[in-house]
Image (cartoon, rainbow, N blue to C red; front, top):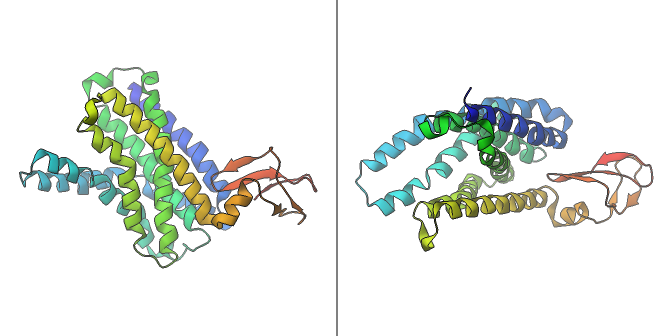
Length: 276
């Protein structure tokens, strides 16, 4: 088996275990099966929209004979314009449409994005492995692929979660916000295609990775704010809160685990661990 395929399996398993585990832990108990279904139905979307939408779109744009700089700018919008609708497409099905609400909007978006990201891992591995220079490399040569895919899987979900959260609150243009966030994520890739400021490709790869990490931090905070509001975020990171078990109020200590936009910690009164 090609080394890239082995790393793709590792990346998908890690994303499913870490992100999927956190997702299910954060999901309302009655919504977990729906979240799993959303992940499954999204698996083929990356390949399907790339082959059936993005490639024909690119052929049409190339046929216009545009200037190279204009073409690169238009092409930089392909991913936001095609992938965000692909992630939201299952919500057009009545079964899922009726299940989505304000209470599970963020979980819905995270599940859709995770499923898309998992499918994208497999599709990208298949595409990249066609390069003869890559096909014979050992699996451990693709550590960068592993890290980048894990981060992007989370960002796919976080960006889509923003769109679903807005849609559930009557802001139907949330998909446009998701497209802009997606473009912002990919912007260093567009800059790297032109090698501005005299920087080489390796430098721009590093810049892109740092940018992705910054986006992960920013979107994590965004999810926390959307779920709990600013007072809730303050509580999440140290403010007083009520124990869901015994009802006593307390200030959290240093022991605990932040899980996306929730925290798993012990209550100093009843000594039991709770998700808050």
